[in-house]
Image 1 (cartoon, helix red, strand yellow):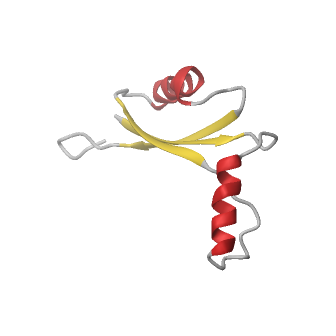
Image 2: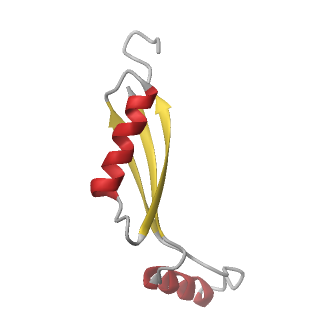
Length: 89
């Protein structure tokens, strides 16, 4: 069993109006050192696979088919093994 920590962000060439709004708000609050803000998504998905390679394969397909829009978004993920109920991996 693995937990996927998935990060989805807009590609660098895609405009991010939400990020611009957050940056403008930060500036209004006095955080003038905020030079660029990009808004994305963070997802946690538990994947019931015994093998790391299969878990990576499953999560990649989840991202490609649903969790990220491959036209405008990039994704990356980390897998963390979740110990089973007996306390062993």
